[in-house]
Amino acid sequence: MSFKTGIWQQNLDAAIPPFPFVFQYSCVMPDLSSLCFRLQEDVNQRKMVVLVCRCSIEYWGRSRSVVGEGDRVVLVKPDSTIIVHSLSGFKPLNWMSPPTDTVVKYENGVLHVHSQRTVKPYEEMKIQLYKVHDYRSYDSLEDINRLELTHNERDMQNFLVMHPELVDEGFTLKSTGYRSPLGFFDLYGKIGGSYAVIELKSERAGLPAALQLKRYRDWLSSHLKEDVTGMLMAPSITPNALILLRKEKLMYKRFSMKNVQHPKRSKGRTLEDWF
Image 1 (cartoon, helix red, strand yellow):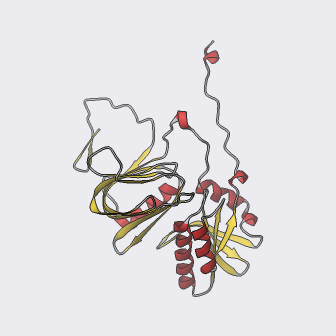
Image 2 (cartoon, rainbow, N blue to C red; image 1 turned 180 degrees about the vertical axis):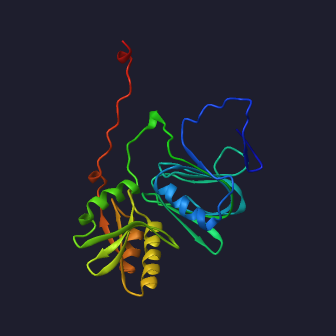
Image 3 (cartoon, rainbow, N blue to C red; image 1 turned 90 degrees about the vertical axis):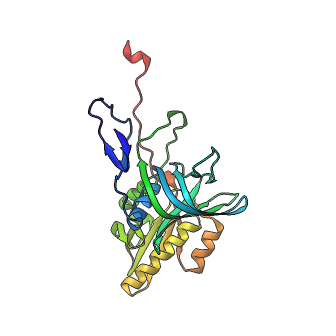
């Protein structure tokens, strides 16, 4: 197949072997509000994401920098690395090394990608996307020389569905992946008589996660017209995120990912298997 002017054209004269991985691709780019949900889900599931887009960048950390609007390539890697490339040269325009906490939101016609490095030295980057030319996400890529067994928020979510008491002794689950105008609630239910939204992070939670939880809590409280409990669950949390939670009367609960068992991997065939 070849890609021309946004259309997949099949070359019937040549037999094309199947790709050794699975990717998701849409010839017609969805609007930015719809892409918001997909990008957040792909980031949460630690997929490899390749974005060709028109964007601007703000960065705080090693220095303070602002990059104006332009066409660029954004890579989000499964280990949470984020790299932004310009259309020339080999050096990244900007980057965030892992571990990072990334939250996506759509506001006033712009897609905002807010990332914070969750260990010292702390860094923060905001990418504003005005137009997406191409979007691809890959969920079956492997680098066998760097393979590490890790868990993501989906594994954590599935585990807590089976063990809701680890959220709170009085927690009753109503749904997972509840879709709000701001994004998907990881867990939605009640703690005692109060409705509750639970935000999950499988690695250290940063300020973006705390801000996301605040937005979810505020929207749900306004929607239901009553007080709502908000809780962030993660193995650890950055100081600024914890300060925000306390200020907004939101809860933080430590969750050890050791509770979630690693899946057993089948052993590959060895040379002895052939004799």
